[in-house]
Amino acid sequence: MFQTLHDWKVTETSPFFQNPHDSDALYLLEAILSASQGADRGFAVFAFVSIGGVELLFDDSIFREFIGKGSFQLIVGIDAVTNTAALESLSNAADNYPNLEVKAFFHNDGGLFHPKFCWFGSPTGGTSIVGSGNLTKGGLRDNWEAFEARPVTMEELATIEQDTNSWMQANATYLRDLDDPEVVERVSKNKGWSGQGGGGTGTAEEVPESDVDEPGEDDVDGTDKVLVAEIPKGGPRWNQANFDKATFEEYFEASPESQKIVFLKHVDESGAIVSSESRPSVSVKSHNYRFELGAASGMKYPNAGRPIGVFVRDEIRTFRYRVSMPGDPGHKSLVALLNAEWSGLVGRMRRVRTDLTTLKSYWPSQPF
Image (tube, rainbow, N blue to C red; front, side, top):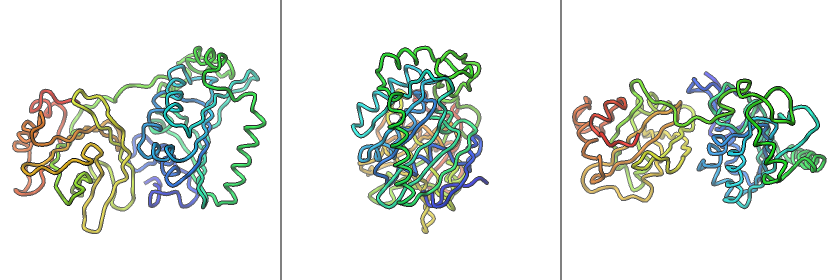
């Protein structure tokens, strides 16, 4: 088993191996989100950036909370991979978050601009992360990567900040605005990497596809990719949906022993993603295993019938979902599915793991 973040915070220097096929492995994205919690400032520099990477980080609920209050400086390389769409996505993020400053590293000096490093600070210390992953969908979670995350003291953080400022001052002529004409021209040529820095003349075949072209949603096939589950009331905050241990561990790939992030994407009736939610798994002494569902936030629990959550697995610990309330289109179809497919004890919360074909047979207009 690979190491995971202890108590949802980096507490000691640890090398992490990102394995996209191992539910116990830690994503670089998780380490960054963990480091940003409680921080009031941060800095990052990445060689490559893609629109998928920007969306994963800046659309995340945890990172949005950080950047809404704390300051964040981001330097991105444009020698290869980083394209026009990625810069436009970063520009939009900078427009949305006044505390975000983004610069492009533009040079003609030869060699490839290739760092991947970030740090986050608070009044009591911070976290430093360095590794192989870029600000791309692949680098943050889909590729095989390695990185080190370590806590730093206030004194160490002061040194890191001083070194960062010194580096930026020494390279000020290379740090350009995203709409700088030379930056715009450079990224318009980027299709990959030929091994030559500063020109953006490479071919796409020489860079991993996940660092060049961002795919859409992963294909979902096979069995047990879909969970249809009644959500119990469990108190006034029923949007903290409880599940049984088997569902918690086997379907959501969470663990009662160590806290992990489950990535949830709430979709609307058309299947479009409304919001992205990073939810630390929660288990309590009463043997409740739960995740907070943003789609149910502020909604009153129905007087008759139960809400039904529908989850579709895209990747490890990554799910699209909807919450269907009594009276909603499709709710009766989901009740019919549970009536037919549930084989557990009467009176228990019904939870059925199935596939998209079965889901569509009961609910032809389903949005997944």
